[in-house]
Length: 450
Image (cartoon, rainbow, N blue to C red):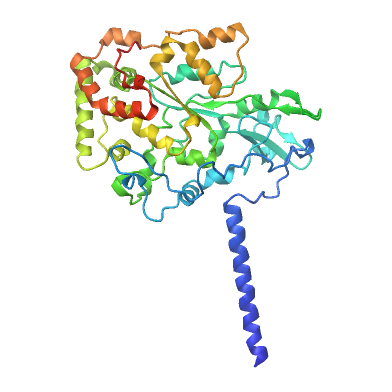
């Protein structure tokens, strides 16, 4: 009887132990504690694989925190925007397994830009990249880099001019200005996004500065950085509706900002804005796609009127935030009214990232005095002074070539009644923005010169 009793108990205990170990290993793998046995190609240089900034940790709250979306049109309780029991971290990993599995647990310590070495098969890369692989005797490694900074918006607010001025700095290397990966192209693997920065990664790796520690030991520092200039990053969150979450007030519980925070909690973001009324008309003039011959100040007025009517109709049964992000509102092509609701987008981002990680500037100020705005940008990015005169000219001098003067001349300024209508629509949102930033310049009371 005793023998018959002990046998099943032992087997039951063993099964429970195996199940526990399996669950533990799964959790360790899921949260990035497995290194797949890959060696660090920099260990020969005395660099520990994990002795660097952690990706998975954040400077704000725990992993299961619920982001409180502040909006002056709603109470703080309604601002949660998340269903009961909603786990932000779990949802991010579930929705983006390819991103988190491709990332290292930590970035390289002597690189200012977030970079890491990825183990690859030599035959899986092209001949040009093959020559750039690191071989330490245990395998081949490829340097991968994410952007150090992001210009997150807004369209027709001078993001292109700003991006190319930044990349004129000797410690900044550019790439494709607008991959639009985080907001629009995440269906593609993260590897595809990283491929955009292959040339930048090579420059970051090969351009080094030597310095000495207090003990006299020589250290190689990689101080070059790169950036992403996609102006859709702050506002385009259309994919949240595909998940069919049952959320209060029909508001998105997860935004691009949340994903970027999980991946790069210390990234830096630049947001450039302009008078939303002027931004809307500039974008209308910019769009083509079969509308070029039909453009007129009257056509713009009609389209702007329709866009306002659609948005105001939505507000009858929904919050401002819900209508701002709702991808199912009838489209008003060439007149994207909601992109001028800067306060809604920025308030959401400030609920995710600290204020000192987001630099906000006005296009009007940049056009008037690029030297001041660019000096502020370089300070924000921790970049050194410019010494070369040609670099100074490219960065700090005014440049009127990128304006849309010809299109304004051919079609004309918007009708006065259109301007009054749009100014009235945007006024309350500008007021909230000015309060949020504690800066009355964002009321745009003065006549714009751009």
